[in-house]
Length: 346
Image (cartoon, rainbow, N blue to C red; front, side, top):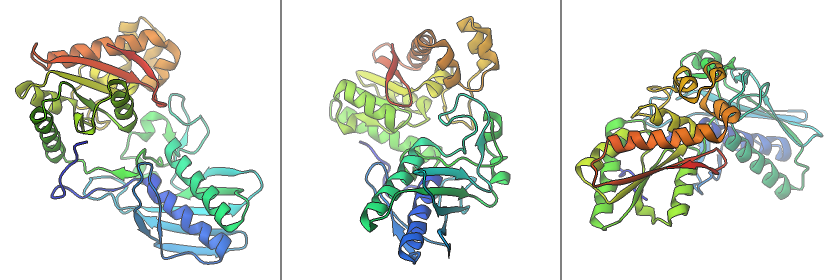
């Protein structure tokens, strides 16, 4: 699949990847009596970055380690934040707690239940895997309480969408790939252009642009597309389609989750959370479901409305896509949920 050349902006690591590294180091302190100076972890796509441990401490039945987040050249509010993990021996399997600066979910519609610390599913899975693997290697029981903290997380969270989403008290521990791609519009869109150029040179009949790794996998599987047909679209659906309009391919597929695809259906061309939001009041009107206006997210609305909303999103997202393309370019859209199940196609 097309990727940005090495001369472009430096990538970084998500809070989830940093937390996983801190947990792995802390487990060394708990079970081996020594916190290493650096650790190597495996990310969901197989990358194996090394993280330096900035701080550590060992106590009776517990250990602590911290990693300074490096967001690369991305203007991320958590760049250089201290991501801390404390591990305590327990008897109830693997339990997650939110310490200082970690937000807690107070409203429905998010992938984490109300009342839980805002530690997203993939980072949880990464940390659970580290605990299980390390316990097996050292002959220990994987009964661990993991407490994550970010000392200035509450202040940093005020610069994010967390308060509006009902995540209060601090930051979320995020990431689906472990990697932060530099958020440079020019650099990223240039990489999309190069991907289109390659597809045209190869004479491909279909290319696809997706909002994330899960939708990319689903769309690629549906159509059996080669890697170089998968354009690194991310949030830049408008930038990608504008280029395709001037450099046509026979057909383009757009794939994404219900939230971002709802924004596309409502006319947004940049799907990043910092520059577009779902208009829930307008969504309530078109779906004839007044209760949607008071909901928190598109995902929550879908959980209540179901397939009629997914069908509306697919149809209208396709209309938005076609409005940006000449008639000579075919188009379709695929709307998925967080698990990668197809909710609707148009």
